[in-house]
Length: 212
Image 1 (tube, one colour):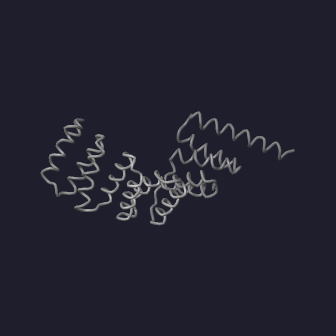
Image 2: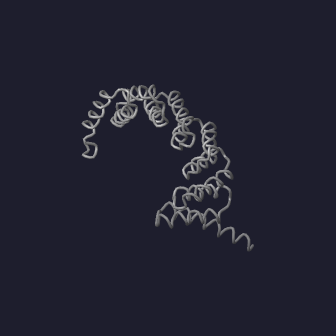
Image 3: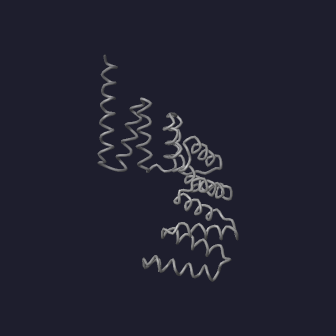
């Protein structure tokens, strides 16, 4: 039914299955997921809680956190995401969702905990790098973005982020190279070309000053 695009009918079938198997956590999870997808978030929470009473699972807490966040229940969402992390310390998605609803210092602490847990994920390094940059710690931000590129060298956004950070540090040649790489991966993007032109101007002025 889902493949046919009939989401309401599919959800109804899943809910009937949940009524027939009210003590099966997997069936209750599928019902909660279908309800959340359909926008019936409050009912989805009820199914999540029922499933968690039977068997606490990271994916259930993750879904519960997302439901609470959609309902504006931020504290309950944070608690659910933390429970998901406690059960699966290497689940990057839970760290990412949690960091999205925390103030910057707490978000940084959360993502640093993900690194300490041994998670090697390019998006983790990129997110953490962006947060450090926003906090004014550009050198740390460069380090983290370079880690991200080591894992995902074709990520255009990471190259452009790195270029912007290096520019603020006055490292114009390296910033230009970062934007060049972004342009290689995403040719003829006006934003990349503009940044390269600006940095080319700075580098030209620097060369003239050196000759003088």
